[in-house]
Length: 178
Image (cartoon, rainbow, N blue to C red; front, side, top):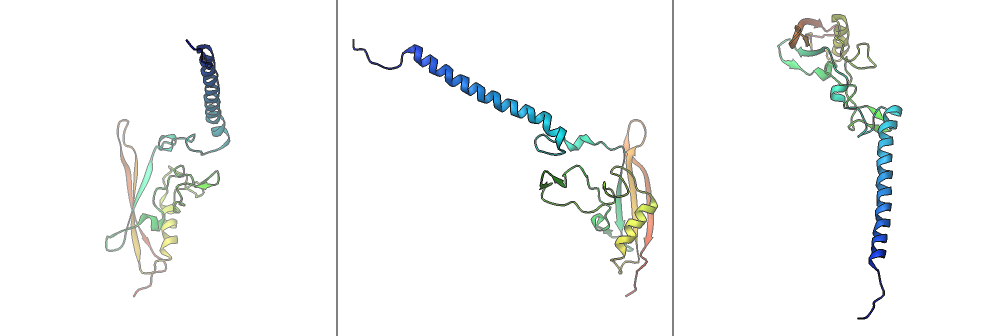
């Protein structure tokens, strides 16, 4: 029987073991880096997917105000035009680590961190009137608008619903008749 030089079972097992050790080392290094990022990224930054906070439940609200704006004929007007929409300041983040949230800047709103009314707080009649009047200055064709503020929150210990509803007629100081 001819003897062929080559690998013996002992050498084959040894080479597999070395390959296994280097693979295990690289897997351990990757695991270590991911775990280190899980710990270090939240301490140093606000937002870095996939290490960011889940914003849907991270900042729970106790109450929220929803607005409806109507013209004198009763037709609904855009909440965004008057800055009465709900803009969640936590999702998407406006600027984080050199990137924009989802590629867009959220429109100005009465409920924003840089505004007078913090997110989740309900604006007073005076604050809503100031917000509407500042936008009505650009709309000389409207004599007034009717704003309905519906505050969603705890109704009793067991239900969430409309806790209160306010309706205001806000006049346009620069209305010019056609």
